Amino acid sequence: MKRVFLDASCWVAAAGSPAGGSSLILKLARAGHVRVVASSRVLQEAEHNIRTKMGEEPLLRYYRLLGSVELDLVSPVTAEEEVKWSDLVAPKDAHVLAGAAKAKADVLVSLDRRHILTERVRQGFPIPVQDTGEFLRGIVEQTEAPRKIQGSPGTSETNGAPGNVRKYVSSAFLRSREN
Image (cartoon, rainbow, N blue to C red; front, side, top):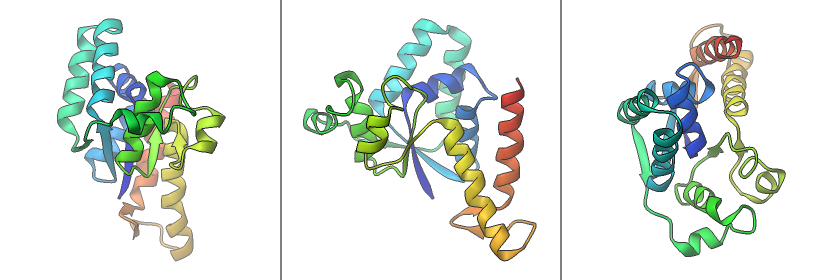
């Protein structure tokens, strides 16, 4: 199962938009299609940003999201682990890359275009770095491939991702783009 490290921006977006791409990734995790990994520092950053910028209802939604998904929490990263990635990002964001690396994530998903989703990070970080749309499109493509090979229209399973995930992600993602 794919291990997805969500950065604070994704948690904030999910708290603010139940129909958005970040929320959809968490729905996939609840359904057992992906495994969400995070660090306590990322979760604390998300909580702080939601509390100070968004208000009570999104904060309550954030707490419900945390309680609804099985989460792998990576142990705190060390200063040495952060320094390893400080040439790719600003020092305040090195903990994100260090956390994803320490968690042995398969992908780092972020909405931070200024600091994380840069060409420098994408080229220099050994783990794929994607925004929510790229990640969800990849899930759809991954689940389409087995159907094309096998020629079955239904629920063939490959790598733990049932064929019906494509339909679920596609329809939910398209609905979120319409709003």
